[in-house]
Image 1 (cartoon, helix red, strand yellow):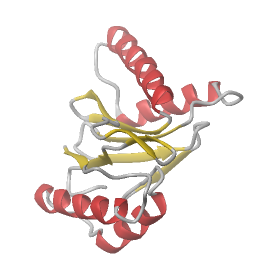
Image 2 (image 1 turned 135 degrees about the vertical axis):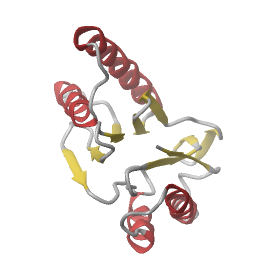
Image 3 (image 1 turned 180 degrees about the vertical axis):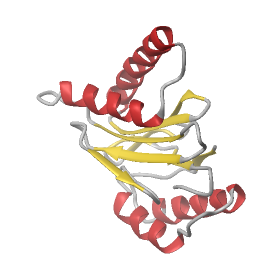
Image 4 (image 1 turned 30 degrees about the vertical axis):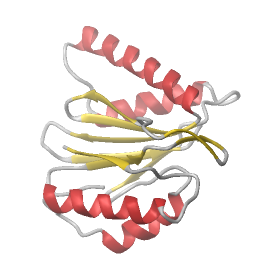
Length: 176
């Protein structure tokens, strides 16, 4: 979700196989650099593999360009990487959130073959996606300050995962 010169990215903590809970402290959100985060919902092994490949590609970019990737560039990289594997896709739905050099927030999500969905307010992914859309639509206000954004995202996440039996066990919220 986007605020005034900031963004929030959040996820639940449950790792499960269908209705069986495997772990209650699973980390879905990863930091690429100080102003760029990616959240990967979906199959845990594919998420970890995709994250490792993305970190590798980002490090190569840093070595070649001597700077960090912009969020828009990183989104294109993720999209291209997913599209390469379209016939045997990674079962992941990435959510990318970052700040540009001018402190303008950027958010987008993709399907498993890299089709981007850009938004100005919020994006959602995962098993609780339908209830997250409803909660975010009801709670979102433009130009929220970081404290208000944290509270809004936390309440939207908690109210949504309460309505979905395949997610839950608390959450992680990052504000940048």
